[in-house]
Amino acid sequence: MADNMWDYQAESGHQTGTDLTGFKVEASDGSIGKVDKHSEDVGAMYIVVDTGVWIFGKHVLLPVGTIASIDVAGRTIHVGRTKEEIKNSPEFDKDKHPGDAGYHEQVGGYYGHPRT
Image (cartoon, rainbow, N blue to C red; front, side):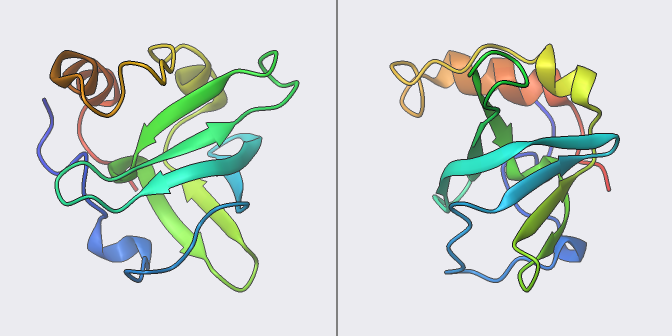
């Protein structure tokens, strides 16, 4: 599993305690949806994105290490992944996350190293 994939990158601009729910999420090549849920659990930080009709109502789990920047004033999160990468990510399973270490490792391994 990638180092720091489940922690915010310093350059992301994240401030602890900021409620990201409802923020628009932009991949490197376009909009993917809005934040439905987020966690600031140490070592297991993530956002769950509701993709709406983009990929048929699918929810995706993104480790916060995928976040390139956060625009609090504009309520937008920019992730350093393409729409295709996100679309092909392991399917979000609310019953397996966050307690299933294997699922956590699968998602972290899919996204690899943090990017900006």
